Length: 283
Image (cartoon, rainbow, N blue to C red):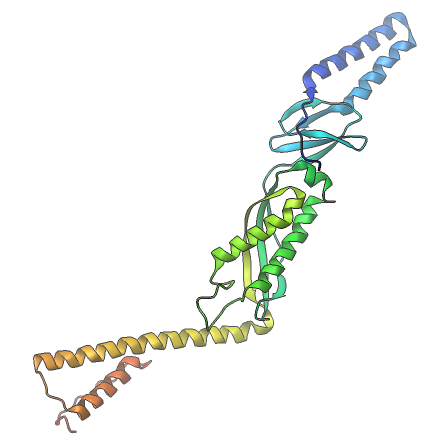
């Protein structure tokens, strides 16, 4: 199986000097000797020009000689190679890709909108140049396929079992699975996944309102449960303090009435209105 190999080209500055010397010989020969054979020097000069190229930092050139892969130049600088070599540019810089929001069904069948943010770079130039037709387009297509598969593997949210990993609550685990899935898919193109995470996540418009009401109802029930739990503790503490300090003696019926009144006050949505009792405890 073919893989990336390093190619060491000639220095461009030395070959440029030789090219200008050849050009000078041709000009001087024609001017002094009027010999048309010196015109070959012009042809050699023009022939050498396509062989010059510059490698910028974090760039590379994949060199091919009539269909034969000769190697990759990664070191930045000014170089010269055989003019018959085709030189394909492959960037080694990190790329940031923010996918479009796609509508898919989650594990429970609910339609959701989801997108992915991917940071990637080419690691194997041979695979990027020859194993796929267009590695940038390959990244976009495979990212879309990976995010669709991910959405179908998890529920957006789980209102009944809080221990199950969901897209909303288990971001760390979900992003790890997404990164692993993308790394496997993009390995064929010699691409390294630096980071992958969910960029946008929401219910689709047709069910967003209903799901919002469900979330609000769940939150209200949870809040009420905490309020009642706290109120029971406060009532219990109040009864213990009354008995301990012997402030008032209450029978079971009076305790039940007191507990009922305190629970109403503590659990009510509105502030209690104070009532002054000028009679006895029985009125």
